[in-house]
Length: 253
Image (cartoon, rainbow, N blue to C red; front, side, top):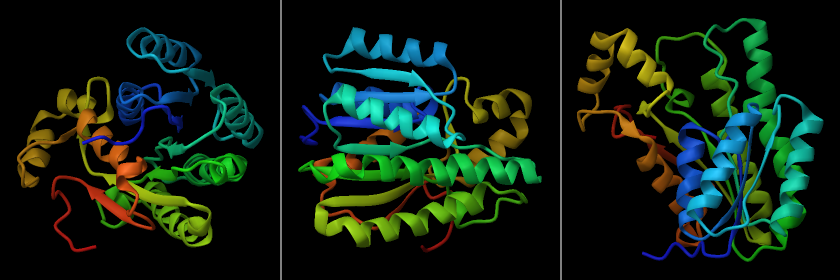
């Protein structure tokens, strides 16, 4: 299937590692020019070097602290200028609060929620000029299911689901779609579930057994889902929450 991504331009917030990186590689391989950011400048530089080595797009990267409003707006503005416009905006970054104290709640609000809001507002003029505009937020199944935790992560992801619906309803007439893709447990080298696998192998195996497909998802699998939803091939997917968890959450949305 042709995703219609050749020549398109994409921004990924939080794109130097993990699901964001796998998505960046897929989009670049499909012919997109990709701009990505993360806090770690070395990681960003390595990611951009890899994209430039393996693909032909006009790729751009910069370090940015997405908890900072000016840094977020500045990156999006610079990325649009470097790419010569924008078609796909993907917000993958998270504050990853695992404790639930006030610092964690504040970090989740700034990174998971406000970075997305600020990026969208900065990108809207360019997206309105695109003939294939989409906004995709990377959520979490923690936004609809209780995973025995008491922190801000699920609440922040749930807020983004409501925000995505508002964007889709407001800007659909401008040709801008907005959706949320929510992964369940995903394993990739160096990721949080890789750490769990090494530190708590019994717990990891129990999680695997609880998933109907018998394993965790992979970064490549999530990237394919995100790429399809964000691409022109997913044109009629709008204002939608896509569960991408292999059936891990045994519930009807």
